[in-house]
Length: 68
Image (tube, rainbow, N blue to C red; front, side, top):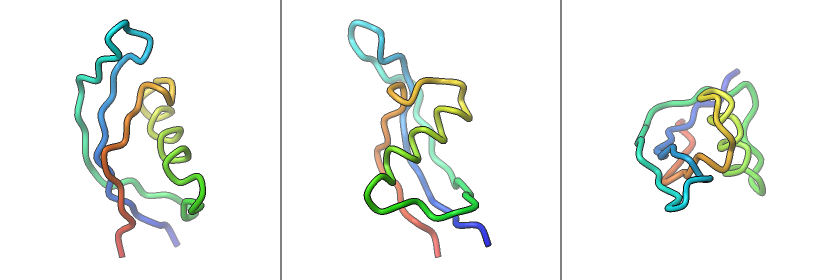
């Protein structure tokens, strides 16, 4: 059974001098396995970065929560 998470995050170019994050997104992400408690934010950033074809450093998660 899939696990669903609500996530609110911004994307941008971490290599830019000002580290500007300009695009704001929110929505539900469905994963095959639950995120691990110790690395949840890092795992979620990596997944989102892959989906947006970005580096994980280009994702800043503002909020995430597991949906029941």
